[in-house]
Image 1 (cartoon, rainbow, N blue to C red):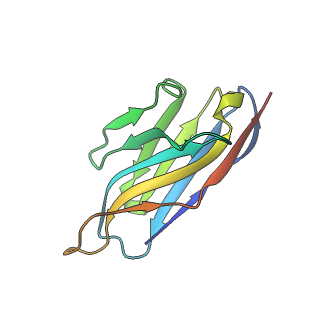
Image 2: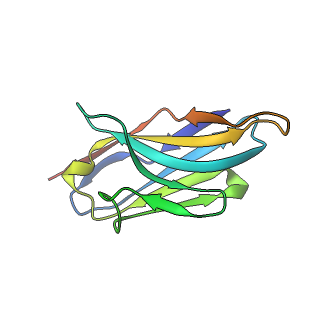
Length: 120
């Protein structure tokens, strides 16, 4: 199983970005999917996650400015971010809990990270 994240880049403060993360390989089903971020010198922190049933959770720092969604047919999770602030600058990592086979346990997987840089 692999998670491939994309959509990062350089954006001005106040702008918007949409991150995508697709799971590929042996994927039987996916439980929750989400996004974490890590700024230089900081610990990795949860940004948002979405359950298989569509329930969502957001960090207070992005609440009201971000929307997480998923396309189960494509095994893909999205994070739409708007009103970006310089404090949002970080490497964003996607995360998912995946059952690779019908008889397997659920495992946690991480994507490779995509850099979001917000300039003032």
